[in-house]
Image (cartoon, rainbow, N blue to C red):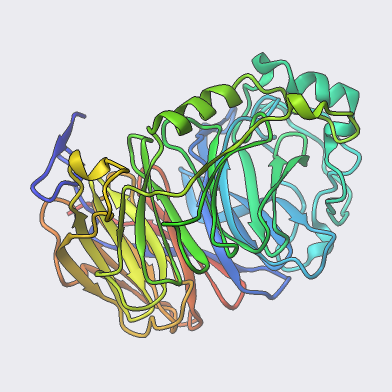
Length: 463
């Protein structure tokens, strides 16, 4: 289908139909018992040969645990736990996760593990078994072992793995999984070898959000409590640029989101401001190109200081405003050329930043800050920070949970409506929903919450 531009500035697909509603098809409570802050879908679609099924995977993170689940398209009654990861640091609390880049192997093994989400002792062991397993191959059942990741050093210390890393033709597997939180480093997990691929260290405090570029699967943005945003080349394990300083955020940065063209991104934080940054700036663009020639360094290598990648510092966004919100901005996202942002005053706002070509001139004395508010969505009982909304890929639907376990869904495409068209309630879902996420086709939505429970909702017949 061909993409068109709607009257709201949000891209839409011709003949796109919204679902009539959603029905709950399963839930599971993870044994760590901690708040689950984030859920992320992989863009990959896997085939299970012999069973005539397509399956998709998503990941959740909470406490020091990360879980990967599978959902079968033709078996919609439930979802299955595939892999479980536990950080050795029990004080770690993961706030965000994201799929991106590519593994060094063929697709994730097709057989589900014996990991029982209600009992962490059933997690798969990634410490010894590093065999690459094809997606259609049947593998034997594994012994019940707890998975642990030694964050003191990553697997680049292995000569065999290091040789794979510098051979870029080997990056043909499914997406890597990145997770981060209070540990100040980003952990990159190879879901095929079931091991730590690398760690990205540069931030000086908690990391609250991770987002991969929609146009370059190796470019990652991270938002941190240290008041900085950082851009990474995950393949090279290299920090490319730091976005902070004179005109940057003056408090914790809670959320970041890419524009669909990959040339801009938006950020929001505790300073109540929303800022737009330009990745197409010559300095940033050239740094991205330079990073592509960097080979990943093993932790035990002696590195010549002169050969170390010189990251750049960008202090000037192209837009900055505090006219949309008066409290913490804990979720931001581009919706076409418009911006969706949420604060802790029970509101999500759809608005348009006024950015002209002249306003991009960094020599001007004042940054552009004017905006046009288009629609405000009210979310009752959503007055705590770090509850994040989600849209489907085509920005036709907006969904968000609240502190009593309800999920509301609005239409935001061609005719944004003030009233939600779906209010999802389950008798056993009564704690705060921290995040919801649509899959690629928007026929599933996952919600995670404070009671360590994961909920899967399936879209019903289109309207």
